[in-house]
Length: 227
Image (cartoon, rainbow, N blue to C red; front, side, top):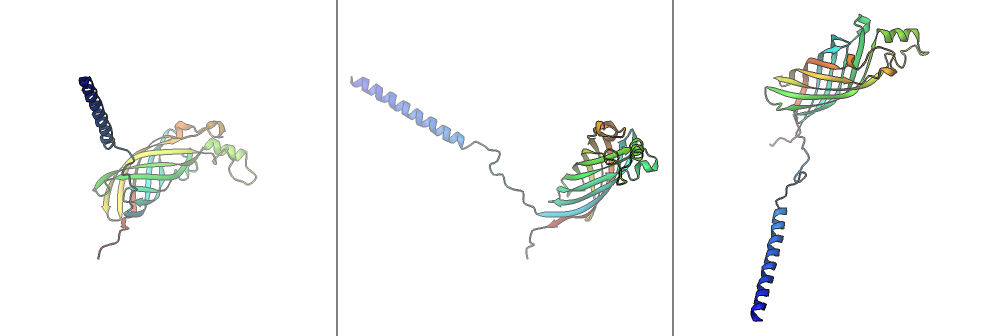
């Protein structure tokens, strides 16, 4: 009987020790768990900039290679993140016999990688609205003038969503100027069922190459200088 009690005591001691060890292992393992949001801190803005960027795009439009002129006005944070407005246009378009008048613009966001390097890359994205018309749309407007004498709702005033993304190679010319060249692709959501012209998605969407300048202040420090 004494041996039986001793055996039971040994078994209970072993089970208790195993349970405590397992609980310690669980606590130890949980302390090693890594979390995505742990230690995440808001980005501190140390530098701010402001610049304008006149730009020319050579774009595939209405089945032809055509230039678009425009540019951007941007606020720059930490020399990397640019936020602002951008717009482009064919200029006088159909009035010069080019067959199409096209313009678009919207909010632009651009991220620059390693801006302190002599040459570096940036990735711009534009989301906004556009309008387009060809000779048929203008002829329809002329045949069906509005009481206020302007273009019809579905003529030159026809609007659609535009999204454009690309990549640029930039070079630092001097403190207040950069030059860039790049390529992008434009998506335009024309719904031809509501349009008086013959333009469609494929005629106003397409690739472009671009060249331009950035002129302004890029690295104004927000930190107090030590005396």
